[in-house]
Length: 201
Image (cartoon, rainbow, N blue to C red; front, top):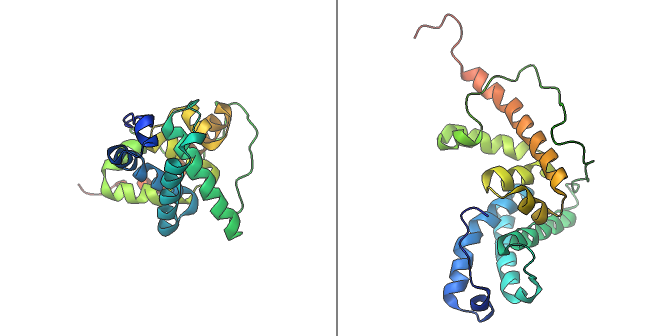
Protein backbone atom coordinates (compact mmCIF):
# COMPACT_ATOMS: atom_id res chain seq x y z
CA UNK A 1 0.00 0.00 0.00
CA UNK A 2 1.57 3.24 -1.16
CA UNK A 3 2.79 5.61 1.51
CA UNK A 4 1.84 3.51 4.55
CA UNK A 5 4.81 2.93 6.88
CA UNK A 6 5.09 -0.45 8.64
CA UNK A 7 3.78 -0.49 12.20
CA UNK A 8 5.06 -3.23 14.56
CA UNK A 9 2.12 -5.43 15.55
CA UNK A 10 3.76 -6.44 18.82
CA UNK A 11 3.96 -2.77 19.80
CA UNK A 12 0.25 -2.34 19.00
CA UNK A 13 -0.60 -5.43 21.05
CA UNK A 14 1.37 -3.94 23.93
CA UNK A 15 -0.50 -0.64 23.64
CA UNK A 16 2.68 1.30 22.93
CA UNK A 17 1.63 4.98 22.63
CA UNK A 18 4.10 5.63 19.81
CA UNK A 19 2.67 2.72 17.79
CA UNK A 20 -0.89 3.88 18.40
CA UNK A 21 0.03 7.39 17.28
CA UNK A 22 1.70 5.99 14.18
CA UNK A 23 -1.42 3.93 13.40
CA UNK A 24 -3.61 7.03 13.64
CA UNK A 25 -1.29 9.20 11.56
CA UNK A 26 -0.91 6.55 8.87
CA UNK A 27 -4.55 5.61 8.40
CA UNK A 28 -6.98 8.16 9.90
CA UNK A 29 -7.17 10.37 6.80
CA UNK A 30 -7.33 7.37 4.46
CA UNK A 31 -10.16 5.76 6.39
CA UNK A 32 -11.99 9.09 6.55
CA UNK A 33 -11.86 9.50 2.76
CA UNK A 34 -13.17 5.98 2.23
CA UNK A 35 -16.01 6.42 4.73
CA UNK A 36 -16.89 9.81 3.28
CA UNK A 37 -16.97 8.26 -0.17
CA UNK A 38 -19.53 5.73 1.02
CA UNK A 39 -21.62 7.84 3.40
CA UNK A 40 -21.25 11.38 1.96
CA UNK A 41 -21.53 12.70 5.51
CA UNK A 42 -18.45 14.22 7.22
CA UNK A 43 -19.71 13.64 10.75
CA UNK A 44 -20.51 9.99 10.11
CA UNK A 45 -17.18 9.54 8.33
CA UNK A 46 -15.39 10.84 11.44
CA UNK A 47 -17.35 8.34 13.53
CA UNK A 48 -16.20 5.54 11.24
CA UNK A 49 -12.57 6.59 11.73
CA UNK A 50 -12.95 6.31 15.49
CA UNK A 51 -14.85 3.02 15.28
CA UNK A 52 -12.28 1.50 12.95
CA UNK A 53 -9.21 2.51 14.92
CA UNK A 54 -10.76 1.49 18.23
CA UNK A 55 -11.68 -1.86 16.65
CA UNK A 56 -8.13 -2.23 15.39
CA UNK A 57 -6.74 -1.68 18.87
CA UNK A 58 -9.25 -3.82 20.79
CA UNK A 59 -9.62 -6.64 18.26
CA UNK A 60 -6.11 -6.85 16.87
CA UNK A 61 -6.17 -10.59 17.57
CA UNK A 62 -8.63 -10.93 14.66
CA UNK A 63 -6.00 -9.68 12.24
CA UNK A 64 -4.62 -12.87 10.76
CA UNK A 65 -1.86 -11.27 8.72
CA UNK A 66 -2.98 -12.75 5.41
CA UNK A 67 -3.24 -9.21 4.03
CA UNK A 68 -1.62 -5.94 5.05
CA UNK A 69 -2.76 -4.11 8.17
CA UNK A 70 -4.01 -1.25 5.99
CA UNK A 71 -6.12 -3.57 3.84
CA UNK A 72 -7.66 -5.06 6.98
CA UNK A 73 -8.46 -1.57 8.31
CA UNK A 74 -10.08 -0.58 5.03
CA UNK A 75 -12.22 -3.72 5.18
CA UNK A 76 -13.32 -2.92 8.74
CA UNK A 77 -14.10 0.68 7.79
CA UNK A 78 -16.00 -0.31 4.64
CA UNK A 79 -18.15 -2.84 6.52
CA UNK A 80 -18.87 -0.28 9.24
CA UNK A 81 -19.87 2.24 6.57
CA UNK A 82 -22.21 -0.26 4.91
CA UNK A 83 -23.79 -0.99 8.29
CA UNK A 84 -24.60 2.70 8.60
CA UNK A 85 -26.17 2.69 5.17
CA UNK A 86 -28.35 -0.25 6.18
CA UNK A 87 -29.52 1.63 9.25
CA UNK A 88 -30.40 4.66 7.15
CA UNK A 89 -32.60 2.57 4.85
CA UNK A 90 -32.46 5.48 2.42
CA UNK A 91 -29.67 4.43 0.09
CA UNK A 92 -29.68 0.86 -1.25
CA UNK A 93 -26.49 -1.14 -0.93
CA UNK A 94 -24.57 -1.66 -4.15
CA UNK A 95 -25.62 -4.77 -6.02
CA UNK A 96 -23.03 -7.27 -7.13
CA UNK A 97 -22.06 -6.79 -10.73
CA UNK A 98 -21.27 -9.51 -13.25
CA UNK A 99 -17.56 -10.02 -13.73
CA UNK A 100 -17.46 -9.21 -17.42
CA UNK A 101 -14.17 -8.48 -19.11
CA UNK A 102 -12.38 -5.46 -17.65
CA UNK A 103 -11.42 -4.37 -21.14
CA UNK A 104 -14.91 -4.71 -22.55
CA UNK A 105 -15.92 -2.34 -25.30
CA UNK A 106 -18.15 0.32 -23.75
CA UNK A 107 -19.58 2.89 -26.18
CA UNK A 108 -18.04 6.27 -25.49
CA UNK A 109 -20.41 9.24 -25.22
CA UNK A 110 -20.26 11.68 -28.12
CA UNK A 111 -19.51 14.51 -25.74
CA UNK A 112 -16.28 12.88 -24.63
CA UNK A 113 -13.35 15.11 -25.46
CA UNK A 114 -9.73 14.16 -25.97
CA UNK A 115 -7.67 14.54 -22.80
CA UNK A 116 -4.00 15.27 -22.65
CA UNK A 117 -3.88 14.44 -18.93
CA UNK A 118 -5.92 12.20 -16.65
CA UNK A 119 -8.38 13.43 -13.98
CA UNK A 120 -5.90 12.42 -11.27
CA UNK A 121 -3.19 14.68 -12.72
CA UNK A 122 -5.47 17.69 -12.50
CA UNK A 123 -5.94 17.38 -8.75
CA UNK A 124 -3.26 20.06 -8.26
CA UNK A 125 -5.59 22.69 -9.67
CA UNK A 126 -7.92 23.88 -6.88
CA UNK A 127 -10.91 24.60 -9.11
CA UNK A 128 -10.46 21.32 -10.93
CA UNK A 129 -10.09 19.53 -7.60
CA UNK A 130 -13.41 20.91 -6.39
CA UNK A 131 -15.12 19.88 -9.62
CA UNK A 132 -13.57 16.41 -9.48
CA UNK A 133 -14.76 16.01 -5.88
CA UNK A 134 -18.25 16.93 -7.02
CA UNK A 135 -18.42 14.46 -9.89
CA UNK A 136 -16.83 11.69 -7.82
CA UNK A 137 -19.63 12.23 -5.32
CA UNK A 138 -22.17 11.70 -8.09
CA UNK A 139 -20.81 8.27 -8.98
CA UNK A 140 -22.75 5.22 -7.76
CA UNK A 141 -21.32 4.04 -4.46
CA UNK A 142 -20.05 0.78 -5.95
CA UNK A 143 -17.94 2.69 -8.48
CA UNK A 144 -16.99 5.56 -6.17
CA UNK A 145 -15.25 3.48 -3.51
CA UNK A 146 -13.25 1.52 -6.08
CA UNK A 147 -12.07 4.75 -7.72
CA UNK A 148 -11.12 6.25 -4.35
CA UNK A 149 -9.10 3.24 -3.27
CA UNK A 150 -7.38 2.59 -6.60
CA UNK A 151 -6.79 6.05 -8.05
CA UNK A 152 -6.80 8.33 -5.00
CA UNK A 153 -5.38 6.09 -2.26
CA UNK A 154 -3.27 4.18 -4.83
CA UNK A 155 -4.03 0.71 -3.54
CA UNK A 156 -3.27 -2.17 -5.85
CA UNK A 157 -6.07 -4.08 -7.54
CA UNK A 158 -5.52 -6.95 -5.11
CA UNK A 159 -5.58 -4.68 -2.05
CA UNK A 160 -8.74 -2.97 -3.27
CA UNK A 161 -10.42 -6.31 -3.89
CA UNK A 162 -9.51 -7.55 -0.40
CA UNK A 163 -10.63 -4.31 1.23
CA UNK A 164 -14.05 -4.38 -0.44
CA UNK A 165 -14.62 -8.12 -0.50
CA UNK A 166 -14.65 -8.25 -4.31
CA UNK A 167 -12.83 -10.26 -6.93
CA UNK A 168 -10.01 -8.55 -8.79
CA UNK A 169 -12.05 -8.85 -11.99
CA UNK A 170 -14.94 -6.93 -10.43
CA UNK A 171 -12.53 -4.22 -9.23
CA UNK A 172 -11.14 -3.79 -12.75
CA UNK A 173 -14.61 -3.55 -14.29
CA UNK A 174 -15.84 -1.01 -11.74
CA UNK A 175 -12.70 1.09 -12.02
CA UNK A 176 -13.02 1.11 -15.80
CA UNK A 177 -16.64 2.26 -15.56
CA UNK A 178 -15.82 4.88 -12.92
CA UNK A 179 -13.08 6.41 -15.08
CA UNK A 180 -15.33 6.50 -18.12
CA UNK A 181 -18.13 8.13 -16.13
CA UNK A 182 -15.76 10.76 -14.73
CA UNK A 183 -14.35 11.54 -18.17
CA UNK A 184 -17.85 11.93 -19.59
CA UNK A 185 -18.98 14.30 -16.85
CA UNK A 186 -15.77 16.29 -16.75
CA UNK A 187 -15.73 16.68 -20.52
CA UNK A 188 -18.69 19.03 -20.13
CA UNK A 189 -16.71 21.05 -17.58
CA UNK A 190 -13.78 21.38 -19.97
CA UNK A 191 -15.96 22.12 -22.99
CA UNK A 192 -17.64 25.02 -21.21
CA UNK A 193 -14.24 26.53 -20.43
CA UNK A 194 -12.53 25.88 -23.74
CA UNK A 195 -11.92 28.98 -25.95
CA UNK A 196 -14.66 29.27 -28.53
CA UNK A 197 -13.83 29.58 -32.21
CA UNK A 198 -13.44 33.23 -33.08
CA UNK A 199 -12.54 34.32 -29.54
CA UNK A 200 -9.88 37.00 -29.40
CA UNK A 201 -6.81 36.00 -27.45
